[in-house]
Amino acid sequence: MNRPVKLGLVGACTALLVVGGIGIFNLVHGLTAGASQDGQSGSSGSFDPSTLSSTPPSNTEAVKRARAFLDSWSEQRLEGAAGDTDRPGTAAPALRDYKEGLHLSKLTFDHVLSAGPSTVTPGATKVTFDVKAEVAGGTWTYSSAVAVVRSTNGVSAVHWNKSVLYPGLGDDQSLTAGKLPAGASSAKVVASDGMTDLSTFASLRGIATTIGQNAKPTGGTTGTGVAVVDGDGDGVKALKDFSKGRPPVIRTTIDARLQAVAESAVKNPQLQEKPAGTVALDWKNGHILALAYTGGDGDIAINGIKSPGSTMKIITSAALFDQAGLTANSPAPCTDSLVANSQLFHNDPGLKANPGSTLSQAFTVSCNTAFIKDGFHYLVHDGDASALHNEAVNVFGMGSWSIGGGVATTDPSIPTDVQAGDQAAQFIGQGRVTATPLFMASVAATVRGVGFKQPIILPDQHQQTAPRPISTRTAGYLQSMMRSVATSGTAAPRLGGLPGVGAKTGTAEEGDHTNGWLTAYDSRIAVAALVEGGSSGVDSAGHVVRQLLTGS
Image 1: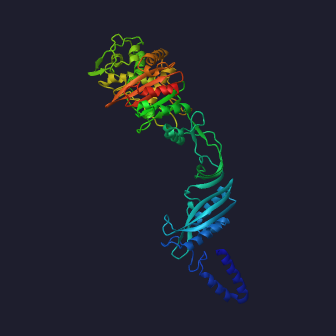
Image 2: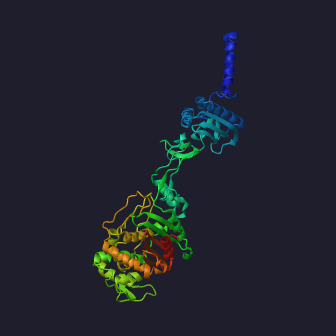
């Protein structure tokens, strides 16, 4: 190696001085002047980074230079190792940081081999090697490489960058060993049981990733090992585990058992692979217990913004009770057809006209003309048709919700400036009215819980409140009417016989097809489902809702 050779020459010089005086010294000095700083014969001076050669060093020369660098590094002669690089002033402190950050006690290198011209550093030869480092907590081994360059005067040097310390290490990053820092281990986003990983559910993988990036984890125990840290000392990535810790968790409101049911329900064979979305809430507190969907157009459970059809009659009925003073027994004649603002409306095929129908009876059979007649008569005043919007906002909490964890949801919409036929169509959930299964599940939850609780997926997420609570009178009417829908009305074919269930079906026209809706509640949950292309609410969404209510 370089230094033993130089020491030998110095010893010889001393002896010659004794024998031959100054003349002999000049001879020895002449012999050493032609040797480079790194001991390479035939070169002169030191490495000059400003005059790089475009010709890579030979394999032998590159391995020799790399070995000199690695030998100094392994012996912890860090200034010497830095001197073997093309950036000594930058390399020296980085090598010290490596030693101190890892609490290094021993470092060895093996299999130092040339890999030929570098494909990354022009004019360099790549040298690969294996590293074995005794660090705090254990032994860490990895493979690495350096690029060796040369200046035009024939002197070679190791090209310095942070990846010399560890492959891919960034300029603002360093290494640490021992107790792993926060951030080196990813937080686990789990269900309300604290154990079930949300990413195991197909519908929640994207949501789990979003929550993991935005919510603050809790708990967990720190393991030991080697990690990359950033300039602030925060963990970037764990490279080696010596002892396993328990990752911190982000607990959500999801009920793992019910989520599994929901994942199955949206794939019910009765749906014939039509896109479907469903949401289940705990109506007591607004916690999202399950959320599932199919189809390639995104998460239609929380972002499927569609006309909700007759499920909107829940809010229409509430507006008639609250703003017009009607009762469940108020007249609501069900005719075959009706013209409102020059637009013709009709009922679903097979629905018999009942001129003496009450509001409750019209709700049970989902008579469109009855709700258009009463809605248009009682809730539209001098062209102002904002009453339905006001009811949805003030009582049912319609607005921009944040369910937590940065998860995006699409807001429902009941415009205040509806004109012409839309002034009537809104009362049966058509026209410009749009909603999501998330919102319609919340509507049912508001009725059953006698008050709005904004849906959330993180238990500590702030919940918006509605400007005023639903009155016990209005909630009582709606509970009775929704119970009739489930037992003897449009939802009975799917939900009849289930205890404590209230429901409302909906079929909405969209282009050349219809979408099926159903929202319902029982003593535990409120749920809504949408099936795109469903022929009716009960024969499409009804299958999904039944599975969630029965838990099968």
